[in-house]
Image (cartoon, each protein chain N blue to C red):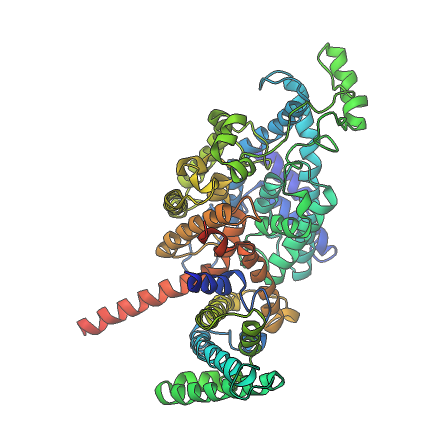
Length: 202
Length: 422
């Protein structure tokens, strides 16, 4: 039950893009068509879902005082987390290149750039600061990835729709994407304040 | 009559080259009054007399009765709070004049700000004035609390028209519903002016028992002498708020202590006819249903969205009945139609053809999901007592996505059929 709560909370209520504004660069750059946005969103779900438990294990068994070395190595957190993420992204890149060359070409530089996508490192750091358990960190990763995926395909569909609109020249492209993100953030505020855990306990 | 009007418009038509701004203005009012006699030249095209402006005027017609009742009800609630004229029709002139004095500035400010921005952009782009604000401007006063300060109203309308519409390229291009965007702006920027028990009754500083009424110059020194000369009752400047009056809306009562608390304050027939506190236009259910039928009959609004929204609400509310973890969840599902603004949102907000999905299948999905999300926000979210505004905005964001996948599914199905037959 708690697994589902954490999933719903990170996907909808505390959406990584629309309430923390993390992972904006690829969110803004790859959201021009639904198809590529869908591919990137899937990649982010996968990477987040895999790296969170791995990083949890690293943090618990290598870096903390209770871990393998018996000393506090938490200052190495950032570098080791990024290394895990980079390795996972490399894996995704190889898979995408092998099975869907068209998507690989469409995503271009943004696929390897998932490595420095702040949503992914941010997710791992949130996990540490919120002291989630291992299973909850999986839920957090999948939920965060799903929320990111939803946000990017929604904005991609809107941007496909407004392609033929008479937008003032100064706002075309990125300017419009920023305004849209803000308005979507307002819409997502509707769910803020719901606490799934409060109902589950009754 | 028509000829005289036409002649009048011909005489005042300003020169397009010399004063473009005046000509834009002129064109806007001309097409509002009369259908232009443009005929297409060359090619086979059919022009429908039912153009965008005519379509929007239909919505305004559907809202007229709500305006009348909303104004009267604003007055009625004011006197209920004072403990005067408790029955609906007593003190008729006082209530009506109070409502008109209250609503007229709201209506004027909405239109001056919204149309001002619209006119400016039409002139800038060299287009005719776009019709879009006709409906938004008629809806915004109806969804605001009667006690809204005018400067907040002006800010919110400016935000909605500017960021929500003109940035996207004008009428028909916006992604989020303009009227709801104006309301949500107030909701998040000035929450104390649009939620709680205090704001739904106008005319006094505070609603606590014994606090004095707050009439302006126009009530006391303009209308009171007039009423006196007819020998009618007048506004009583010494009146105070009656004991035991809270101004709580049915939803806030239901949220805190369930249906029994609502039933102890308001009878279902009061909630049905709409003599309860609330936003100006949302309270009277029969008039809203009348407006909705009118819109369905003239095919301006889509019945699929309305039907599926009712379905979404009913299914979610029944599931919540079954769960029953809080008092609010136990409220029988059919009473959710009585409380709050569901019907208003269904008839006039969700069916906005610009921001809703445009495929028929998409409309079923869209309406149903609004019903579900709205109920989730209303019942499960302790921060917001009412959910429809936010649910519709939430689904507006996803409407293009729903359309996209409905279209993709259609394309792949037809492709398969074409391949099979080939």
